[in-house]
Image (tube, rainbow, N blue to C red):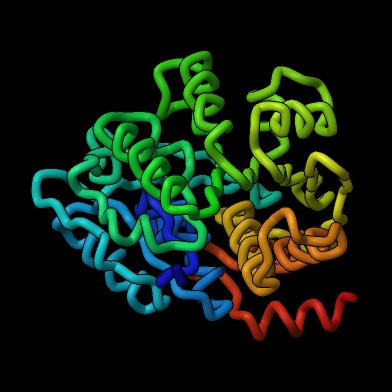
Length: 322
């Protein structure tokens, strides 16, 4: 059966209020940026020409409406985005240091994204996507946790490839131990996994990235990508491991860097029209190169979704750099 959607993603859709200087009176100013890891990823795929759709929940408020319009502007399907007047749209306040690194403070008790229920799921969409992507933020609270696990099973039974990004935010979990246990519990269900350098060590209790990659593969996933910041990414399968160097640039805001990398990786993967098992290692390597290029362009601008480059910008960047 031909799948109707290339990538469907479930999870948080929120406002990143990002530091943007100070007022005349010396008070911090924050810029309203649309974000959320799954939405950032879908934006990349949409820019690459793939059909995408978002599954999640926002509040019936000014922020929720802004986010819905943003997805539509980016060409992302919103038929499975629930607007709920009982909850407020989730907000994240983002501080940025001189290196572009971030710290977060969330307004999410209870944020609308945590209130997606299994009854809200668009089962037809889940059965008709080539790739289903989710992250760990939808596993922090009920009913979203149950909804996420149900969505994974529906997509798996329909033959979709499962993509996972365990995105650890300490303040959103009861404690580190429960976070690690929950984030690890879904690894046997996934085909592709993107994880940051710090998160890879956290999840595997190892001291180096090669060992972490092997541990994650041993848990059942077929391909692991460990992002290494400016050093690029370690990609690993059962047959081979390699570090794909990153592009040397000056980061302004690292918001969405990992999401944009993974969106570029999956978009390049889709362009081959092959199963993971059919891919040559050189093709997997090129997926990572594309992802690195998307991330390099993303971090040179502020915000999540607004910083995602176009397919033309990525191609031009690669032509200059390679």
